[in-house]
Amino acid sequence: MDRLAESLQLALGNEREKSFLHEQENQRLREQFNGLYAAQIRMLESTYREYEQARRTGAGQKELYDKLLGIIHEIKGDDSKQHLFEKLIDQNNDNVMARLREECPDLPKNDRMLFAYTVAGFDKTTICMLLGNISPEALNMRRSRLRKYLRTQAPPSLDLFLRKITLN
Image 1 (tube, rainbow, N blue to C red):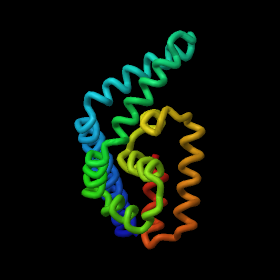
Image 2 (image 1 turned 90 degrees about the vertical axis):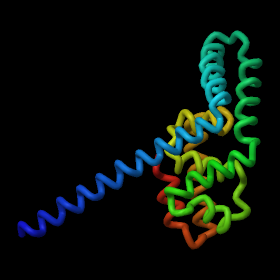
Image 3 (image 1 turned 30 degrees about the horizontal axis):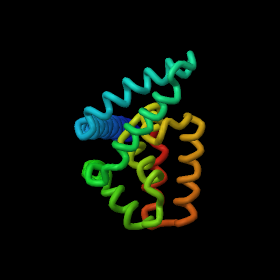
Image 4 (image 1 turned 60 degrees about the horizontal axis):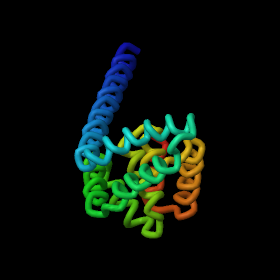
């Protein structure tokens, strides 16, 4: 009985260590992403704060919203950096992005990016901004549709994809 308890404690300790290491890798990945887009991310955060304030007061909201969408478009529109970002994700996540591209070639870019941002461990607020300033409810709906799409396609890595999309 003591041996079983010892084994369980050891296994639990190993799982905690894996979880801690996974979170460290996600943090490193977020930092690398921010490095790729440092100027745009700072401008995005600043503009988003201004936009939220304008939304409450109604002053200059349209101009700030357009500026916000422009910054988001710059970040999303750079395919070479998006591919680099996906390669960074692949390094620590069982080549999940390469598998997703291969097994679901018809997946729209926005859904692929939602998947990538989730796997990278970005919080909901950041993902909402990166996907075009959508609401948290819209984000939940997009994740739900993505899970449904993946189940319908039934790719070989379905279980891996579903685990990754529900991380956040």
